[in-house]
Length: 607
Image (cartoon, rainbow, N blue to C red; front, side, top):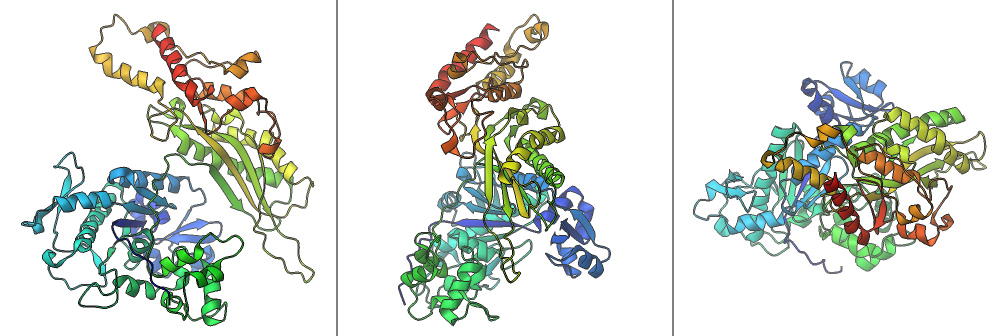
């Protein structure tokens, strides 16, 4: 057997898994539901249920009618609109990220987080007082020694794997990794307690040195508990055992339950180890790891092939040994795209009217998502908000069913077909209702795209439709991912700060009314003699107006190869190298942004 991969256990990684997240969102809104059996419904299925419902025999993926038969007093709530779950997930993510130095927090779906707290642990290990370990203080802010919490540095907080006796740990006999993980367990406990107290959500936690191990060990004790995978992490490093706790922990897992190894890879591994691609007996990590001749090269031959990631053999070899060097990636404040989709039974999309109705449902959800994720509402209500980013592209994707084979069987179609077009400017009009924008978007754009994807008037047999906005261009702002500073917001903040130290006979703004910024056309637009109208003081209208005259607006294009623009359009069109002014909507390269902001600043001072 090949040598085990090299370990690097310098990090301390925490994994948070919110308990019954979908149900917990409803319980946070209505605390009375916590004591009742609660099931969340999507279509005719129970997608999740709370622990009280599980105690009474309900399970995930049950039919609603079966759930009501098993538990007649179950409370069923609709969960098909994911907006509230997405909002709750973002709120919890922001809350937890506020505690972690460097904001090294990665969001995994709606209900899981990975946290790299290595910097915090290193600092607190340095300032740990060895003479008063039972009343240690964990510092949450290196600049303010009063912010933090007390803890007992002689005991792990919560459960451990393997279990250790309930006795005081002797730090003098603990190595650095022991102490680091012990501190990590107390930080995990503090975060879970704060989240429950401040936000009303409970979570299960795992503490280890990688995302893989922290996630797996966190699932050992559920719900509302935490588990730390304690050393030794390598064989022969402890006098009490020759086997590492990592191997002991990993070996018992079903290979298919390991993150990074799905059903397809598990099927190939089962075929390699047992000679059969199916079977009722569980195939464990140990079965694969100790299989005669197993090595990274054997795994590469077994799992590689067309479509397989490069180096999959080395990666899986590491996973089998509990080695995972992947970084905790800081999540973007803004998504790269926003996508809404749904699946449909046979015959559900039989007519154009059915398609239009379902596309309108998708469009409503899409616009609500855009307003949730892309609007900055810190300065007031939605009508006064500023778009943090402007998607440029509307994309419609569908997945048709395969026709039946000669024997009547029908294979599953995994492939989607798509059509793209420029996103119309009226989508950014926040003074209009979601319903009116959605209906217009479908009537004027989405249905046209659908007809070009499916020219036949009837007979569509579609499994899925997806509506998305892509090619997001971030507006100027204060976030570090932003293209530049929001100079308008900067002046508004400056005015608010200096107001108390200024002398005025009267408020100039009140005397003459609100004064808006003039929309400044880009050089390309100016040469065409195009004019744009803008409502005074309406940043959103300005951005929308800029889009209304986009050279791509009325072109019907499928991909970039069909997009023929002149040199002027290529220079000034929105791309990752360009930026949209949040005040007037003008599109410009980065090098022109400072001059453009200076123009607005001078304009404001003249007013």
